Image (cartoon, rainbow, N blue to C red; front, side, top):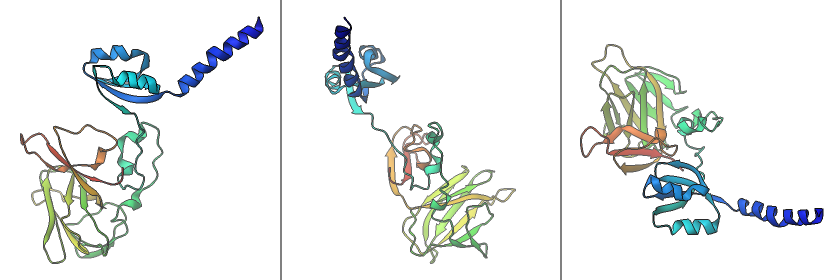
Length: 256
């Protein structure tokens, strides 16, 4: 009797283990939330009409043919780009208990020689005060400069010019961080930080320079996601529709 029980275990249990190991995760978009119930045996998680399922290749083919399935794609794992100076600002990494390394040196302005209001200065990432900042870039190419100040008292402005005084970019707003997309390379840039109507002079808590690909997204809004997060430059967004909802977001992105 024990022999038959052992054979039953081999033929019934082992194939089930092999079958389970062949399952892969897929994201399925259905027409209506009520359609999710038809996928219930395979469901891992749901968000509205998007369903994460764990299925074999045969099951995937069957599901993809269902009339209420709009789209189906592999649930590939996305990884952060560790060579990106904005890596440490990706909001989702703390959720997965990621231990963030120190990437301060990835800011291309760290260690650069500067003249701040006539005084020589080597930028080390610490906060400082300054209205006219001359940055010696040499062969370094930047696509964007970002300035973050310690407080807001209303609108303030930044301008970036080359060594001849020609404008490379400017921005004005009431956000704590203003970004300037640089129109062309320059071996030396002059950064002007202006807040003429403020009672207290702004202190620059971060000066950041990156050289990223510029991507424009035309949409009704951007959902917080690890692929976007701090890459979204709200201060340079342009509203082409209602003047009060951002319709275009420019991103400075590294490799993803």
